[in-house]
Image (cartoon, rainbow, N blue to C red; front, side, top):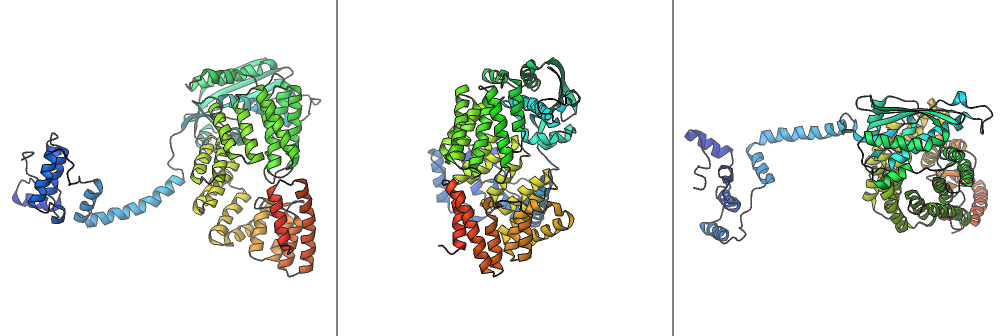
Length: 595
């Protein structure tokens, strides 16, 4: 009566009965959209094939109709997707089983295809500024300031880095960080680069420096079609260098149709320094390898020396002060010189940066790292990072540090989210990928940790250290040293020169298996000085004592532990506020029985 049609309408009696058995009644609203939804629901409940799902009596039906007439909520519930699906399965069990089997096969197949990157998301509109080619070698006299080819290369890299930095200030653009583009110095397959970095365009070019002049060629290329979008050549005086870099950045933004705010335009047009020699010194400093927990103190000190020379020439060189603060903070944080004097040096550089430009994103980022590295002031660092993010929208360091803080505060999922955001802007950054892997390990999500090492090995397939770390996941996950030991044996057989790169995992594996001969060999693979074992520095004598005790040579063990304590005590006295040094001293005391 509601629609003018029966619920099951076949051409013959047989067809009507078959429809009744094999199908569900049609929604009244499909035949007459003017029917009220609740009234349609009441009608369908009356037509339910299962008696338990129909109204239990005419009185119950009358009660629901009365509720509908009074505009009150009815008791019947609309049939949802899952209910209709369940009914279909009951009617078609064979087809349902087949569909379930196909789904079970499709899920792992789909994951395999996705991980193999046969299917990938469309390229994001963004840009990677590739290292510029240095054509200055024949023009650089042998009596130049440093007399080294790499100094000319550092200058050209500085030109590239400044253009990249200017573009990265534009919030409407995705700009890949310097770390991820430097490996493409000698590679020019732009389609592959675009696919690797997930960007639609790359900027490449060359610089030839001759006396007080320079010649620069720049070209913007669409990675999807390998076609040149924009090409420009400049032949100018060196004093025009920074103006040209600003011009290039703005022209590229225009080609990519990126909106530039007045504040961003001002930042792009601002010169980093007015002194070209200071710029060269700064470029050399930032080209040095970054300091890590077991990194080179010599490189860090050389960077500081170069930056001190740069700011001496130009006391208003903000970026140099920020880089100087970072070098001091890292030396302090990693325990290479965990002293108040080192912390004060970092603070002094930051104060100079704020003196020059208090609202600079770089200054706020430097202070955030200082609060994190020097004082473990996480809330203070997060506040500074929020200010920095507003001014440096494409700086992956902001997201990486935010992720590290979130992890230390116990916000693990937020940490992963921020680290993945950092990797969008710096997809080939080894430190960020390792930090993400550490996070998965801390969550005991070992399968994802292994997959993360696969990402690293996709970038550096011959990296033996990454292979060792991937194999070490099995030790933490399943207490299985087999894969790690097999890898160590393979590297020893095919590439023995690489053994120092995996010395820490080699030693850990040998000690876990109580293989004294392997432990002694692993110890020889370490460089002189403290040993980095699981990111903590131990005196070599402590490991020697551990091996001696495993060999039941207690006299030799006591001598080694005593020597280790004397060495570690000096470190603690020199750096009384450095927690890891005290931890190592405590472990040594435990070995000596000094509980």
